[in-house]
Image (cartoon, rainbow, N blue to C red):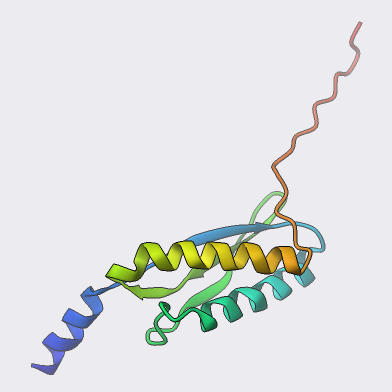
Length: 113
């Protein structure tokens, strides 16, 4: 019976996935951003403590370090938590002067003319 309760409880949980590209001084920036993300998740009342959120570097991209943010929420809290987490992350990034740059490409014309 207890196994069914655990299974049912797990079915009532959902994950919010976010991927944040970090630029600039890569490793130092990523460590600082990971700390900010963990603090934001810790202070959001909709984020479940068990199972614990998963936060870490998910990929080393061409010009970014992708950080995966996977907090668990109750299903009815999924969308509100997502919006709150995004807003709080944006506020914290701005407060700490962390910019999310727009992707840019440089095109050079060689031997034109």
